[in-house]
Structures are given as structure tokens and as C-alpha cells.
Image (cartoon, rainbow, N blue to C red; front, side):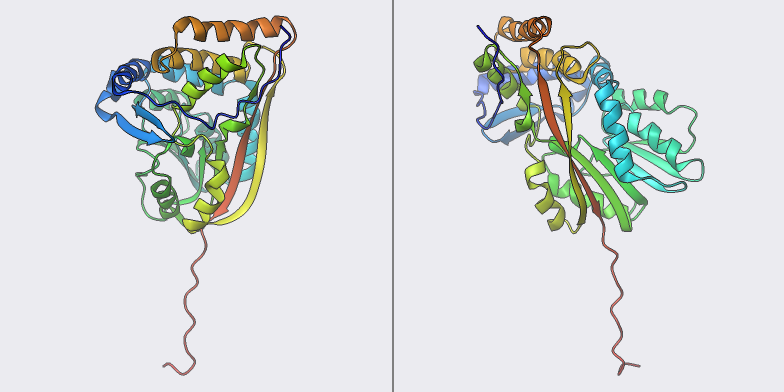
Length: 322
């Protein structure tokens, strides 16, 4: 059967029974580590009932770190850093700093006279970031999350938030926190994915669709960029730029972004998606077969938003007032 290019418009969602929720809860705890068990949260998003712990164990953190090392992610970081344009001496916060790639770049950019602060909820990620940023005294790490940033009012000149807000259930609270920690006139760069932009070639599109629906369940909002402009304005930001960043993998290549994502999606869906293990593995094997046949294709769009916290002008005095 000839390979066909399929656009996974995954607008329908799976609904889990209470028994399946309990099973999925245990699977997610295994996937992300027992330390996350006490902070497991249930969300209902678009018909999906999910219990999702916010923490990674070391093995899961390493899988994510490997994806971030791909050439596509390296180019993406350069794109995002160029949009932020950090200056020597600035204080910048990286909300959801993960394994510390962006945080290290920020530390080098602001120099010893500045400061780069990483905010991250996962202890395993903090450990990776601390090792990655070793030797940069201007870099510090704080345990916290986007909805409660551990920072003072107006503490930072700029902020960067990459691939974070699509995972945050309380986006209004998170944007409020972003505004709070920026000084008046401070700027922010936000970068998130709309997962409906995903194009992944498949010989069995129905099977691929089931797997990617299950993968969607790890997100709070798989389509956040569509509404982010309005949300930013509601939070009191001025939008200065919007842009798209495409990721294209026309070949099945170890070390590429999509190759790394296969290694993350497969164990997640096996443990959480309530699909037969054989079906998930068959999907991954099919992608490898497409690579050998020269028919592999992957594309995904991410969206950049550059915004500014307005400078509040002091009200002018009435000339008649003394």
C-alpha cells in the first residue's frame, strides 16, 4: 500500500472511564517518577480526563534532554534568543528552564554583571540545568512553576518562556505572574506549539491518529497559540511581534527532533494511552520502514510571541492644582 501524507487534525479527544483514569494515573506516576505522586492533578480538557504529575524522574528528564540536543532545537534556541536580544547586565528569567540549555545561553549573554534565573518545578531537570550551567556564577535556579513564580515584583528586565504555557492549566494566572515579575517596559518572549499543525506521514493514518490523540493528553492546551494573542492583551501586555517557526524532518534520522519524539511518545502512550502495546510499537516500526523506503516526512509549527509590559505613565497634574 502506497504511503500517504496525512495531516493529523486531532480536534476530537478521548474520554477515559474511571477505571482507565486510575490505570493511567499509575502509569503516569511510573513514567514521571514516584516523587510526582503527591502532586498529581486531575484536569478535564476537551473531553479528556487526565491525572498528570508535574514532575520528571531522571530517566524521563534525560529523554527530554536528548531531544533538546537535536539540531532542530539548537536552531530553535538561536531563533528565540535572537527575538529576545538579551543585553549585558540585564536580569532575565527563564520560566520552565528544563535541562538548562536556554538558561546557559542567557547566562553567557548577560555576563557577570547581569543575572539569569531559571524557574523549574522538576528536581531532575534542575539537576541537569545546574550541571549544564556550572561555572556561570550569574546563573541561579529556583524551584517553582509558571503559576507561582518565585520572584519579586518587577525583578526582571526580560523573560523567556519556551514550550511551557501549553502545559499550564491556569494560563491566566501564569500570564499574570509573568507581568508581575517584569519591570515596567520589560519584555517577554513566549514560544509554544499548535499540535494540529503536525504532519507525520503514515501508511495507517487511523492508527497514527489514535496514538497522537493519546499523546495530546499530556498537554493542558494543545492549541494555545490560537488564543494567546487575546490572552496576552487581557493580561495587560502589548504585543510587538508574532512569528512562526517550522520544524521539518523529511528523513528518518537518528538525532533529529522527530526521531527523539518517537522515543518519548512511545513509552508515554504505552503506559498512559490505553492502547495495545503492539499497536504503538507497530506505529514506531512503520516510521522506520518509511525512512528506509525514502517516504518519511515530519513537520510541526511552533509560534513566537514577543510582548512588552507597558510603562505606566504618571497622571499629569491639573495646572490649577497647587
